[in-house]
Image (tube, rainbow, N blue to C red):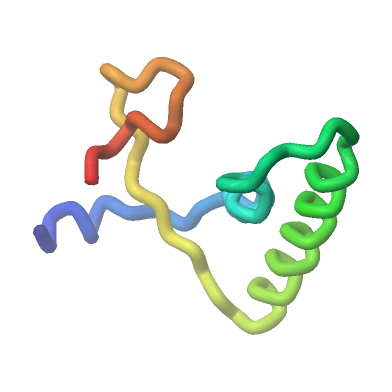
Length: 78
């Protein structure tokens, strides 16, 4: 699989923020208010700022042109 690793590119700041904020609220019963969603976005923004300040680079795989539609969870199996 070294070929797949070479195709990875740095993820954008907004991609990382979105993934972190969704990860913070997923798997839990969503509240009727928007408080959990808003708080997760704030926490994600701060985490990304700290990662950038520390010199971390988050890499991502290329998005295939077929089969995924608008569902990022279905882009890659496994």
